[in-house]
Length: 223
Image (cartoon, rainbow, N blue to C red; front, side, top):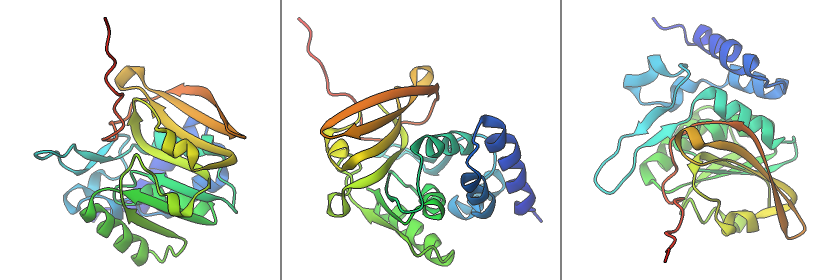
């Protein structure tokens, strides 16, 4: 029988603590939340490996969706500086693992996911785990979730070519948006901070994540 508690401890020790994640609240949340509950049944034994896991295979007209690797997720959340009274938007929540972690750190989490099946799965698991301060809504990832805006923190669960203006518009003054911008080896974990109507950016570390669909750069014409 798989000892998920031991696997979880190993993940935290080797992937989180060892990679400059010094916020003990993040460490505790990742130690407590059963990541195996957020992956397909056939993949539960792989839930704690240091890799991205497919939670929805690619199909006609749909890109594959992933649970992003624990180390990168932990470092992105660390960059976001999530406070206990924060309102957080989790974009591309998939099956809801990132939402569950963020819910342990904040006052409330609104997650947005465009796949109805993933929305149902995520909300069911969050309910089973008695996580009452988070909900996953179905909607366009690039549009965010304006009804609950503005947010203290916005997290993007995948790499993007660019961040839509609609998401920056949903940040509070002083709010932070964290994303991996660029694909493959060109990916950079970036924290954007909104001050007034201006948004500054700071690149912090290299990271490679599967892309979030819909965030591709618009074609640019050259002459």
